[in-house]
Length: 129
Image (cartoon, rainbow, N blue to C red; front, side, top):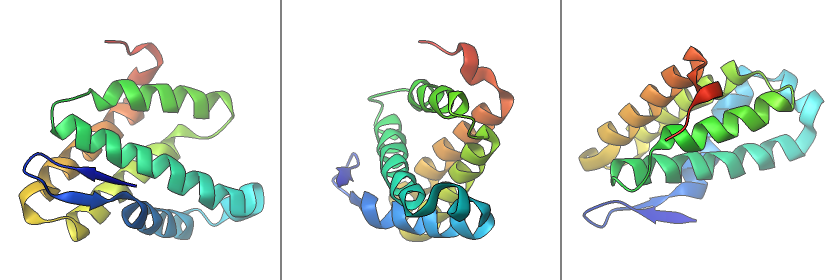
C-alpha cells in the first residue's frame, strides 16, 4: 500500500507502519500476551490507514480527526486504552520524521502530533464534521 503526496512523492505505508508497530510493541510488550501475533497484524493494518489519513489530510482531502475519532471510538468500545492510540500517533510522527523526504515529513508529522493531542483530549467522543 502506498499513497502519493501532492508533488508526487510516494509513501511506502507498509514499511512505515511496520516500523511504527515494532517501536510500539517495544513500549507495550504486554500486548503480545493479550493480542498475540494478530495484534501486530492489526497494528500494521491500522497504521497504514492512519498514515494514509495523515497524507490525505496534508493534501487537503480529508480531516484526519474525523477518521481517528471513528477509530478511537471503536477501540475504546473494545476496551483498548485510547491513550495508547495517542502514543502510537506520536511514534508515527517520529517514524515519518525519520523516513519521509524533507519536503513533506514536517507536515505529516505535525498532523500526526496534533491528532495525538486530539485523542488525548477526549474530544473524539463528540467529534463530527
